[in-house]
Length: 304
Image (cartoon, rainbow, N blue to C red):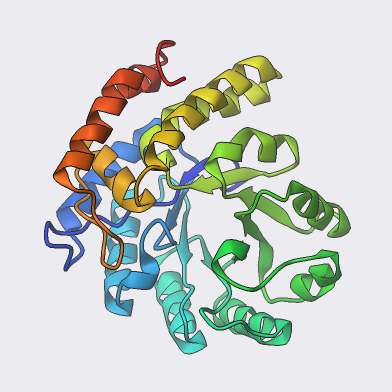
């Protein structure tokens, strides 16, 4: 099935001043990712800094991505925005460009009643014939899912599942069970990739898959052959690298890692704070010590 594996939440490469989408860098990033065994791509989400981009910039990212991917993997476009009409516009654009699915966070930043959130998603789902994936990230909004919302969710037009970015897998499992197979879940927290898979997630969408896709593909392959010991080992290796970026602004830090790996993605868009030169050098030294390149190639040392 689509997205039944490792799906990078694509970075949006920017020019060195952070003021424009860098199309050349975006093409190089896609060329880097496509051969790595990924199942799909998630475009203009939180990792892709979609909320900091203009609608026109988001449309450019979608157009370039779909052109470069050329059907090699399905592309899900995040259409979440403050205003419903902007989300509807982005969903319709994604459909015209050939996206495989659309997704949206709840409207933000105001806390809204459940009926308002559902109405927002309803209009996005009805705007196209594309599958709709709810982007559930309670840390980003005041909206929380519970078992009582299963039926209202299933009534949304074209809904097929959720991107579940939360550590409460009890709720996740309940949503799966109570939907009687009508919902699928793609997990969000990269550090819980293995746990989410064991608890029923079909696949995963995450930021670190831009630079650690081979490790997570390795975890997935181990799960599929029933080798949980190996899967746990590699999840531990991945989490060692994830701990390194928790010292910094996460997206900015990960874009620095892309520079380290020879796939520059530029800075993050303000208000995200860039790393200082000293912090970049500190991170590079930590990546050397943990042997990120060796781990990507399957090596066993470092990253404890």
